[in-house]
Image (tube, rainbow, N blue to C red; front, side, top):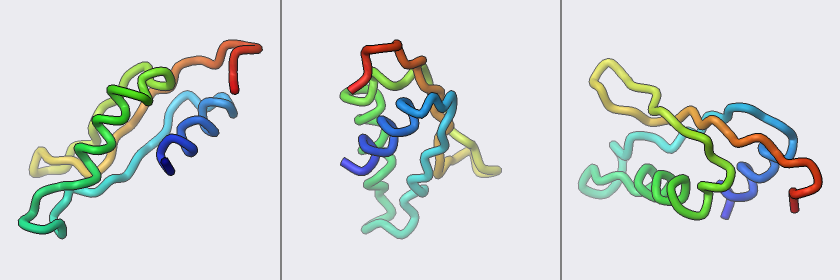
Length: 80
C-alpha cells in the first residue's frame, strides 16, 4: 500500500522519475528477497498505470537493490 501511495503522489505532482530502494534481500531468510519481487509484481500489475518503464541500478556484482522508474504523464482532469 505504501508504494501505491508514494507512486500516486509522485505521479500527481508531475514527477518524471522516482527511485525505489527495495534492497537486494541479503538479510532475508535464506537470502531470498521479499521486497524486490513484490515491487516488480506491483509495477507490472496494479502500478502499470503510473509506469512508463523502469530499470535496475546495477551494482558491480551485477545485482541491484533499487529501481529507477519512469512515470507516465498525468492526463489533465483524469487524476484521482
